[in-house]
Image (cartoon, rainbow, N blue to C red; front, side, top):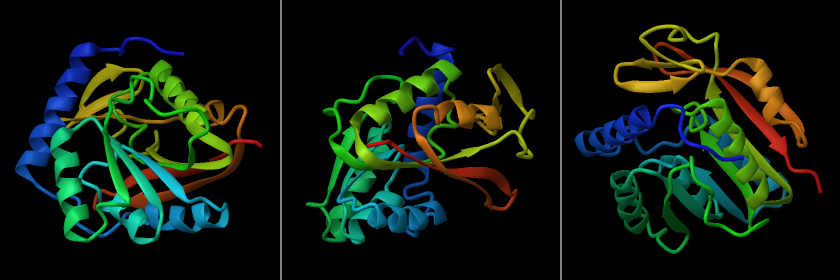
Amino acid sequence: MTGQPQDPELARAQREHWQNTYEAHPGMYGEQPSDPARYAVDVFRSAGADSVLELGAGHGRDALHFAREGFAVQAADFSPVGLTQLRAAARAMGLGERVATIEHDVRRPLSLPDASVDAVFAHMLLCMALSTKEIHALVGEVRRVLRPGGTFVYTVRHTGDAHYGAGTAHGDDIYEHGGFAVRFFPRDLVDDLAEGWALDEVHPFEEGDLPRRLWRVTQTRPR
């Protein structure tokens, strides 16, 4: 299931906005991993994973955490600026051999073989400016590259978030606030994306000062 972005101009503008943001604020999210990444380490390890694909890795705080924990990491992002920062940090930490980077826009198919990774992680990547059709296509690609029995952990802001409905509306539950366009998830979309998977958990949590309200979703590809 593929297709053009709901708004090609919005997609272009968001990519440029993220590029400029990473250039202006190197390492903007700091060096400490996110709480969902800490959680994912335990889940992936329990499932016997050796390799992790992170989608939307940015400058790499979570990808580097996975590498420090012993996983072989493929870190994908559409920002070459963010990936350059990630590679520099990996080399400085002695993790260069454990982290490979992939410049990739998730609106396109992944350039990875079928069933080639043990686990996939995406912190707030699915709630970028993506249409429902594009989100379904992305999760289909995750399923394709994930081995049977592999685990997918992702987080999304949901429709209970304070910014839902605020700012510039772009349709399909996408709202732009402060230059960042966010796709807010209703619960039925989470359930639709889990069709054909084992939906292990939908965990509500909060992050940041607003705070942002999110779901952390854990689902497993059946064997």
